[in-house]
Length: 291
Image: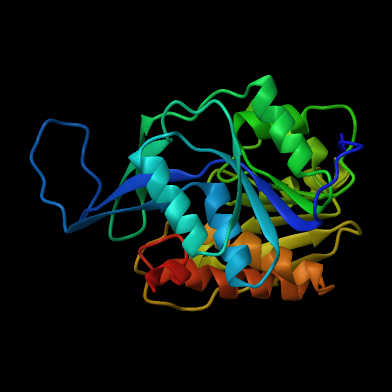
């Protein structure tokens, strides 16, 4: 899949996926499915997107990175570009976005979220996929996030010349969309939320060819498995949570940075947990944007 004959500077990590402009509304509790009136505790606009979150946290950790994302020619897109630049993220834009992807996130005091897609993500086009392929030509690590362009690249038969990370979020282990991502991955990360059997999931990822598989468990920490089937459990640090958006992406960035430094699985999990605090203690994706 690596593009040949293209001269470009070496990039350690390339993240492919969404960067969004979101309206976050903080509520005492999520609204019931009945007509009613409810007062918000607070609200703010900020950047979102799982790939933007990973790139911001990699930059926060001093890792050379590039974000490949589709951003529209609108005010929301200008806000996203500005915040990425402020956070030290190198941006490569894919063509085709008529409007910048945007969500309204309803957040409860316990961290529950309902995300309303106000402006949906653009479909993958031949042009956007080609831009992404060129961007990953000299990458050491490629993060393929759950979006249309990443799915096209993950589904290709030719393997990448880089270590591939995928973040499956709250996959239930059954939905077909995530399957090509698992097949392309050297390192798989997922949330525990919809997994009936964490150990079985980890084993499945290893059996499918992953070198490492990790499941995050929120306040209960994380668990990982290596290619030999060894399991490591890591506790999470106690923290006063400001906002949970971006915590999973911060974890991935922390674990990835630790692996790039040659650290073992146990220290990867510890580094991921530590970096997650940079998201949990900020109303933005990363505390670097609080400045």
